[in-house]
Image (cartoon, rainbow, N blue to C red):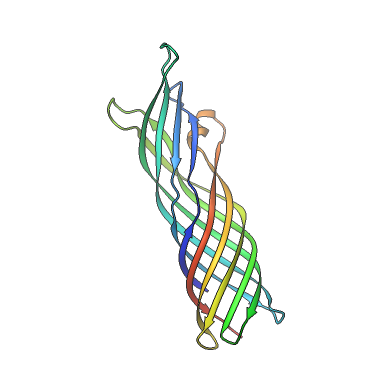
Length: 219
């Protein structure tokens, strides 16, 4: 199977960390994760009992934004007020690669039409641009924000259904619905710098996927 479609339902995430260079300052970063195009390639094998197994690889890539700001505690004044700086936007690209293993059952309505339902474990690799530094610039200018890419992975799950119609013995078209999810801990770079120990922030990978594409079968 070779498909293209839409992935939706993955939410953004945020991180709060103390500043290394500015005592009494909390650094605030929010990351957006929008709907994106998903590409997938997969296949499977069905036994005479209509039970089978399969695997699919999915890939998404997004050009997202990180909104970085700072809460500065002003000492020496009554009630020690907090001044908020920013937010300043920085590019934060993101990509996800998923490998989905599944057990399936195929309903064969006739020689041309098949509906398969499936589920199983998924492995996700996430590459995410994370904010690595936030510095205060000259008065009246935006914060200076630096980013660096981090790569992390973890396991999740997938469930779905695929409907296929074949024009002949080998070739056809199909549509599929899949829901897959994993929680991946990515390194919080500004938190690591502040504490001297590795800090992480959780982000969700996967989501609801609707795809359409080519179907091939071999007897």
